[in-house]
Amino acid sequence: MRKAYFKSRKAFSLSQHPYDIGTALGLWKSYDDNHFLLKIYNIDEVNLADYYNYHMSYSLENNITTEENFYRYVWQIVKNRIKHFEQQNPFSTSHSMHVNNLHKLQQFQKYLHSIDKWNARPQNIVIAEKDELIIQQKREINKLKEKLNQLSHYEVAQKIRIEEDHLATVVDLIKQMRELKLPSGRLLLRCDNKSPYSKMISKYFSNGGKDIPTETTRNYFVEKKGDVSTKGTAVRTVQQLFKIIRIENKK
Image (cartoon, rainbow, N blue to C red; front, side):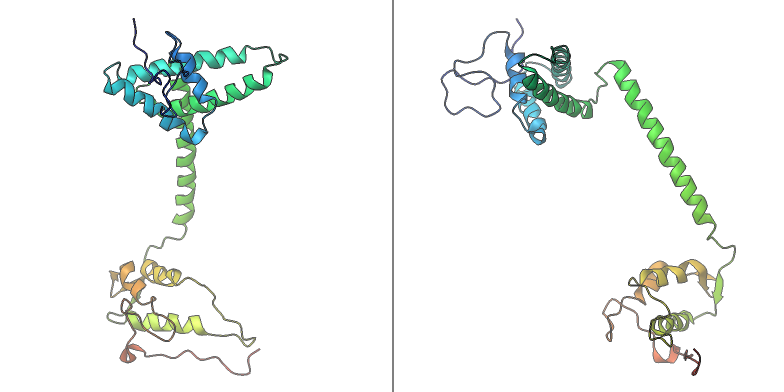
């Protein structure tokens, strides 16, 4: 006779675990599946995994069955009970209870779907899921290809070459541009984030013909207002060769 896969409460015990199945009188023989499912109807969805693992651990620790066979057994009894409730008379006085129980079982079945590492469920379900996954992945690949194609329009065949050792001079000019104001008093350039400036330099400029690491340019744009942080790289006075000024009387 098969041993019960699920941990039952001891008869007349007052300190049983909330996931133990059965009544105060213990567990009826061959009714362990019914008691296991009865618990599910009153367990929150977030706790269904804990409930499943509690009983699976019991089976494994007591050498009752394997993890895969435990899964297959639980999957089958849940599937059968769902089918049972789906076939009930929708006009019966117990319809509300049947709907609630069916909903709980479907939640639990959804969890079982997510942990099927053996493809133990019916092949038509497994294949359908894999087909859907392939379709989703193809859609994602097409989106990425489209995005890559859009980004390729911003690629350049040749970067703007900064005279060697004058990277900081260009940085200084860009920093000046960030502070320029229109006659209206509004900033000419507005961006709360400094990263676009550093990334722009690394992407479209070279320093003496060599690529400029983003870490290098980023360090020029980490300063605090009126103060240079220890992580930042300051533009030295000797590197500040130009000054951008606004032409007066221009409206």
